[in-house]
Length: 189
Image 1 (cartoon, rainbow, N blue to C red):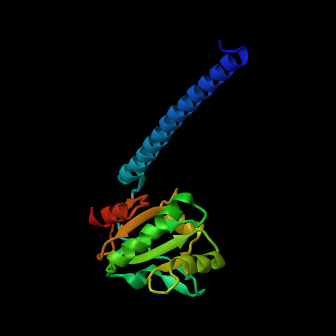
Image 2 (cartoon, rainbow, N blue to C red):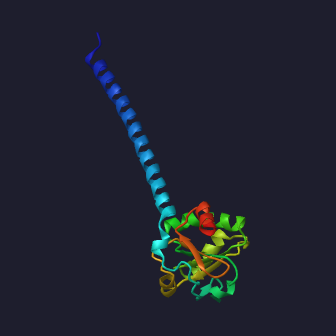
Image 3 (cartoon, rainbow, N blue to C red):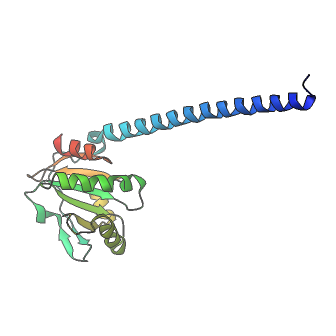
């Protein structure tokens, strides 16, 4: 006959195994739920109805003059006649940090588009940003220190917000892209 101690040990072992199995099942359920939430969030971002959000579609872009990373004034109209991806961002924004490596991939794959990044950051922060994402100085991005007036002028309420300005200078599309595919969709829509 088993002693009381052996019975207690067997019960404790079975309980421990049961708890480990339950913990594993709960962890799997939580992981699936998180993946579903992320997928839903990406779907909401990619299908966000920017036409209702922006009343500037079809309008000519509004020119501005902002400081670049070399502390020189840059006018958006300097790029007139070229297709432009105008990116409004903040280096502290989590979604913007997800966007940046994908924007690098896009700009390498599609060099015909001029990339202009307008940030809510300081000149020093923009210089550090360029060093991080363009170590070899090969990306032809223009990174500018934005102002509240420019963010308001373009109706920017969240970052990242990307606008596609076609070669005719018209605002053709906008979205809150974070992936290369979403940026391609922006310029091909």
